[in-house]
Structures are given as C-alpha cells and as structure tokens.
Length: 210
Image (cartoon, rainbow, N blue to C red; front, side, top):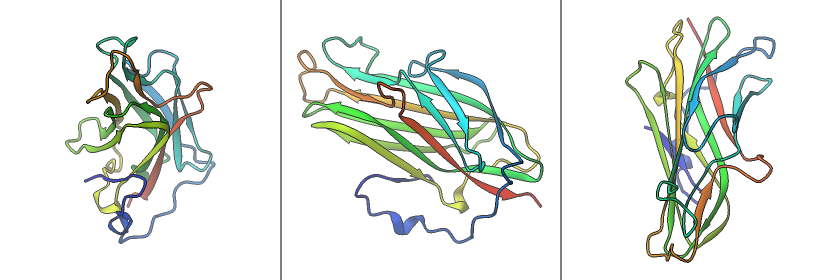
C-alpha cells in the first residue's frame, strides 16, 4: 500500500527500505515521456506541461488552472477538479521503473469549518495493481501546502521488464464547505499559482532488468 507523509506525521520509521536503490541509466540514456492523453476539469488544454530531469530521476508536471472551490461565485461542479494523465514513458533498454515518491504543492484558503482533500492514484494500463493516496486539509487555513507520497521498494508498482504500457496518473482536488457559510465566503484549494510555478514532482526508482 502507498505510504503517505504529511507535515508532522510520525511515519518515517515505516518507510525504511530493505534493499539499496539501484543505479539508473546515465544522463545520455534519456527517458522520453509522451502525453498520450491529458484531460479533466483541472487540466484543460494547454494548461499543463511535463518535463524530464536530466538525471532521469524525476519528471515534473506543471498545472496552470487546477483549483477546486465552494462559495458565492463557484458553480455546483467547482467543488471537485481532476486531471487524468496518460503517459507513454520510453525507458532505455535494460531498465524498468516505478513511482517512488510524488511531491504535491499548492495553495489553500479554507474558511473555519471547511475542509479539502488531495487524492492521487497510479497504475500501468492493463495491470490490476493501483497505488492510491489521500491527503486531507482543514480550515481555517490560508497558506501554501505540500504533501509527499512514499512507496516502499517492496510494494512498488513496477512495470514488467520488456513491457510497453501507458502509465496513468489520476489526481483530484475536493473542497467541502463543512460548517462554513459558503453563501458569503469562498474556500478553495489549488495545485497552481499565479505564475504557474507550482509543480508536481514524481521521482522514479530504477531497476535493472535481468
């Protein structure tokens, strides 16, 4: 199961791994990511971008219009936003990979009594195993937020060596007004910023195929 870490959570001891990480490809053996499909109310056309780190250890998804809200100016559907990414990741010969950690950052303004949630799931097309996470936030809050998902090596959702499958990453933001007065005040959570500088970083764990 996916292990999640929030600020102040005492879970670090449970995240220890039994085997050392294996060296990945060299920077010259670049991983290539193609977006097969990207849709959802949180990532409309041309509102997201994907880049790969030079050391092949991470890729970044940047969102520009990913905000869920409730309040006097919100529509009935604005309480939930989602983004479904389908990525064709071409890895160098002799290697496979899994999502090792995922960092999520954003901003939340929640009235007293309101609450929000950031969710994610990861799976390879055609595989039965799905890795899920959920991070709650509660008002009153008016600040940046960051959450990190950790996956132990023994429970990673590895792509089988030689397989070519689409990696699906589904994220979601939700806001619930709770006991707050949404007729007068707005509560929101976002995975974006005014300068589109808020990133979601997915770090990869490499494994050499035998």
